[in-house]
Amino acid sequence: MIHCHTVPKTKVAVTIDADLLEQVDELVSRQRFRSRSQAVETALADKLRRLGRTRLAREAARLNPTEEKQLAEEGMAEALEAWPEY
Image (tube, rainbow, N blue to C red; front, top):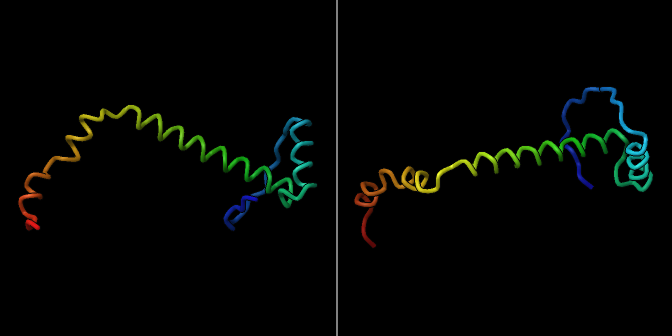
């Protein structure tokens, strides 16, 4: 079971499909969640995390590996000269 952080809560009203609500109620009755609210909050948090990862992947795909390597190595020659030899 996934637990959400304890933070201030705000009550909202939502309209959802009756079949979906039946599935949520079934999960609550099987004690997968304490309540409908916890089930909906957990599902929403999970979806938002997934969307965040999708955005990160999309942004990472836009990077040019050669350019990123050049940026990472920029200034490394001077830094390596300053390091003692082992």
